[in-house]
Length: 213
Image (cartoon, rainbow, N blue to C red):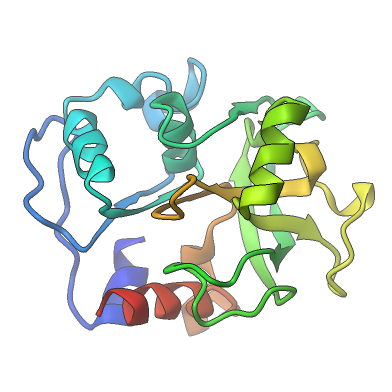
């Protein structure tokens, strides 16, 4: 993630230790993936109580843009900065592969380089990425445009066959009500370098940098 951010911005991001209690005044906070506490407990549950998260929550309330990927998404859900829950994959197996994502909402600070319906192809690597919310919450999120990405096929068609983990309504990423926070299970940072043989994630990061510049 740090390498992806440096490639897009031209400067290395400040790296924060989980026991830090101050972050400063960043333009963007990124909570990356990486097997939080070994994923031995419910993913993100322990990391959500790290000292630094109090500052993340404070800055979120002030409107600081936050991107959470994989375990970072789980932390945002555990702290209730994002709605819903992330459950075990319906296969009960860890899944690591490339998936297609359809952009559902392009009028945000995260997706300014995309159009609704655009498809990107990025990797997933998780055992608990099955997004869940009850129907009332999902319906409200649909109305508010809080669905960021859905799992789809290469043509952008959403179907059960394109859903790798059983997520409700093929949801791969969501926003908070103010669209200042984005959480997603797939890893766009693993699709920005030539040696990754995939540059699909560039649009997302380029859009974020442009919006916050």
